[in-house]
Every structure is written in C-alpha cells, then in structure tokens.
Length: 159
Image (cartoon, rainbow, N blue to C red):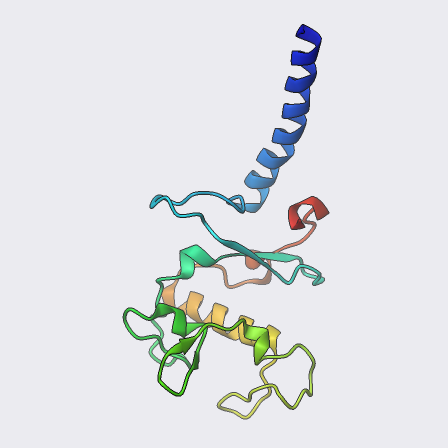
C-alpha cells in the first residue's frame, strides 16, 4: 500500500512540476481563473514563427478601448470588441471574425485589405499595427518583439 502511495505521489509531482515551471516562465496558465471567477482565455499566436509564440490574454483585453484618438478602427463605449474585431455588418453589428479571415498571410494576395496609405495589410501587419499602436497610446503593454514573442517555448507548452 505504501509503495503504491509513493508511486502516485512521485507521478503527481512529475506532472505538477513542469506545469508550475511553465506557468512561471510564460505568465498565467491557459485555464487560470480571473478575480471575477471567469476562466482566463489565453490564445497562442504565431506558434510556428521564428520569433516565438505570443500568448495573448484575450480576457484581459475584452473591455479595453484604445486611448489613441487616431486609431483606424475606434471602438465605441460598450463595444470594446469592435476595436480589434472591426468588421461591422450591414445592420451595424460587430462581426467577431479572426484577423486572418480578411487579412491573409500571403504577400500579394488580392483579398488583403489596404490601409489608409493603400499598403497591403497582411495578418502579421494587422496584428503588429493594432497591438503596438494601442500599447504605445495606453503606455501599457509590450512594444518590442521580445515583449510578446517568447522564443524557445517548449513544445509541451503549445499543446
């Protein structure tokens, strides 16, 4: 009986230690509860990119409105989602699509939207422009590559 208990404890520690180390290295775990009791939704972006994985805290951004008055897609009070998910239906209702539905990854794709300067806006550029401009305006959040991208993330953290 004691041997079985010892084996179970060692097995449990073998599972718990990597999780604890991963949480301290990469911020909040994927399923962490927020103060309000809601599950914190972490989205992994650029998982296969050369600069490393980006762990995006969707829950932490849901109600944030960019303070930048010149932002390309301003959100209205009570509709913070439309600041990032800026597609609006014919009835004026925000459509919450992923960026790459409109912003494709391939340079020269005719489906990619153009910005104010008529430059093509691929998915990567849409992320960078929106995120960095908002972080700079709010004077909060990372504005450098390494601030978002976490190089050397172990494959287990991506599952």
